[in-house]
Image 1 (cartoon, rainbow, N blue to C red):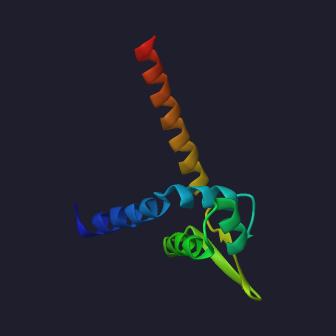
Image 2 (image 1 turned 90 degrees about the vertical axis):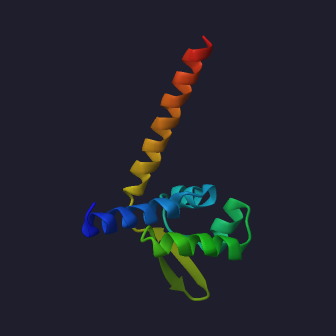
Length: 106
């Protein structure tokens, strides 16, 4: 693997790592419906604001979400809706695995 290819795969891995947490996946799914403030996401996730802010910062640093300060509140939005395709792909893998497991016990 050459240096350029390695940088590309490292960049891809960084984005996948940012998504690799249940709370962050939940927030990405919620942001698909539109911008949300940190306090709203915290309530929806059942977590405190500081924890949700850390998760959002990880997603922001990976380029998945963007933020917009409005007065005292910060609203987050999805930057790239194509990440939802990845989530759908994961669902497809889960379904395929379930079918295989079901076939084993039949």
